[in-house]
Image 1 (cartoon, rainbow, N blue to C red):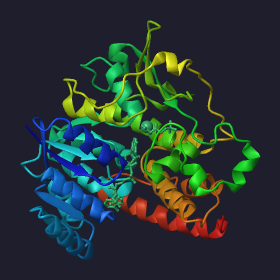
Image 2: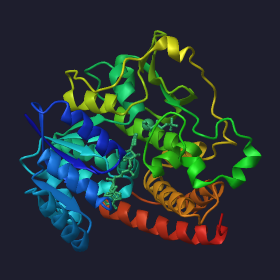
Image 3: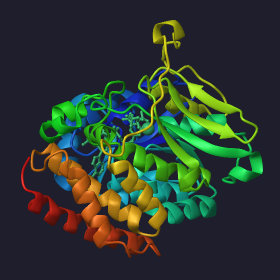
Image 4: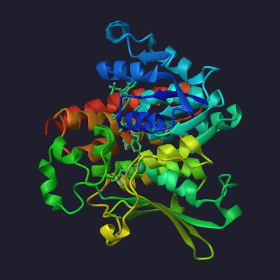
Length: 394
Ligand SMILES: NC(=O)C1=CN([C@@H]2O[C@H](COP(=O)(O)OP(=O)(O)OC[C@H]3O[C@@H](n4cnc5c(N)ncnc54)[C@H](OP(=O)(O)O)[C@@H]3O)[C@@H](O)[C@H]2O)C=CC1
Ligand SMILES: CC(=O)[C@@H](O)[C@H](O)COP(=O)(O)O
Ligand SMILES: [Mn+2]
């Protein structure tokens, strides 16, 4: 029986994780669930899965959640604040931590799980993008097992040899091919992108996800973050990570070997597959996902990404090549810009402009410590807010 903490239980990944867990009550029990704003959902989850702890952001939310739990007759203990978030990730009773908080807010608790040597199931790509070298050093020092949840990285993990240790040349890996759906605007006239709404940007053609990652998929910043994520997870340099637009999202990514073999992982676009894979690894368990029907799929298409349509993708490659604190600055600027776009305070096309402006201003950002990275994050957010202001409304 494995004891599990889910950071971000109320979100899209959190809900899918609990769906898989519910199919295997003999394998997994819930230690802690965390959420931020969706308190009724968190209360219902705690009650159903008999969570020992729930963690929310502040004292007011904790009081509200405690009252909801009382009404449900649940005995879950309610905690709040960033220190408690880290505490339920590193607790000695915990075996597995699903890191599914969105954005930089997930960095500290995910890092705590890595330092404590947990099996870390990483969905929160922003945490790794922000702190790549430091995070991977924490995994190593803590003796953690890091398993990718992001569908592309989970696919790459499955297509690599089981003994793979972040050295592509040691096993004849030539390139990693990350697939990208192209998002909701892949076929739309570029000139018409000036007027897209948050609802249009969040209408992903293949995946049901949270709003932030959905906008990132539309701009292809998601793929940019994933290029950086792949670099850190698999030790592959930027020029050996290629993005391939594949509109069906059936091939989740590929590994190209020096002998000409290309290994891919395929499946229906359903996050319960990589979640179940990482939960049970190296075993396989039922995820509730229907079998892939290749006849219904019919065809698999591949295209090159157009940098004019998706300017965030080259920005992310530039951030990876610049290194040190620049990916953290880029990530923070993107979080602020996407938030402003979703709130109707920034035009869609200005997201890339805000990110680029902040990256230019912070080209010398450092990454020597967690504190330095957090100050880069804070400075980039402040700069991005001023650029959002300068770009004005949608
Ligand atoms: N959804 C998907 O299919 C995929 C997601 N990912 C990655 O997984 C992560 C989660 O994505 P997704 O589930 O879609 O996102 P959602 O927005 O659906 O969920 C985010 C979760 O984080 C919580 N949260 C938000 N802000 C804070 C905060 N400041 N402090 C603590 N908790 C917070 C939310 O709580 P509440 O809802 O209660 O406010 C919620 O539980 C992201 O990093 C994303 O890039 C990667 C691949 C696929
Ligand atoms: C499900 C998942 O892993 C997302 O990151 C997905 O890849 C988004 O699709 P895009 O390929 O459109 O970014
Ligand atoms: Mn992905």
